[in-house]
Length: 222
Image 1 (cartoon, rainbow, N blue to C red):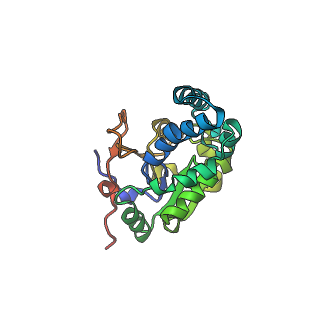
Image 2: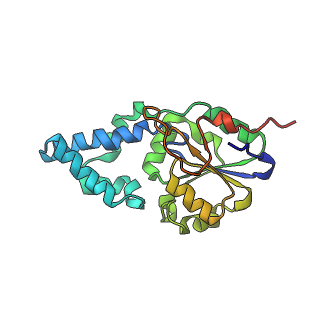
Image 3: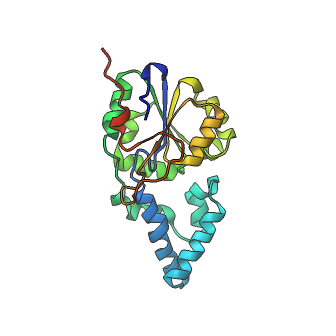
């Protein structure tokens, strides 16, 4: 993996789920907990509920609805916010994230969270982790009306978060998002090898990837 030249980077865009936070929480929530609650709510066996939930998930993959707490509350007739709170003890920050965020601020980079997460999920996770204090700005795709996978997202982001794509780093665990950002022109990209610490490394294709943020820690200012 090539070393980042931090002298060529002014803005750091960071994803949340799977990048800063362990994706185990979200995977367990949507793949296990929600189907269980859906089965109870609708009188289905587990296999039926799992199949129906995943049919609905797959139909909305890559869209804002897929990430929308309110959409799934309506569609599944479940209180998604309350269920997320019930599992909030599983929310965990990836190793070296706080130290990385601290270093970015001390060396003068603009630190921006750019997430597809709904603002209700974002608020829960910031409350549980305390990471918000490290950021200059937090941007949810729901505020911009487009998911990060969509090419037009990045231009819309630039309207509220001005940045030079040639001098911007994006770290994200989603390959479709990284591909979209690359097409837009963001010059510095890193994927995450293990978004979910309970799962094996993912295939990151031709993207350079990190296991821990210590691998790309900026040097201390002299």
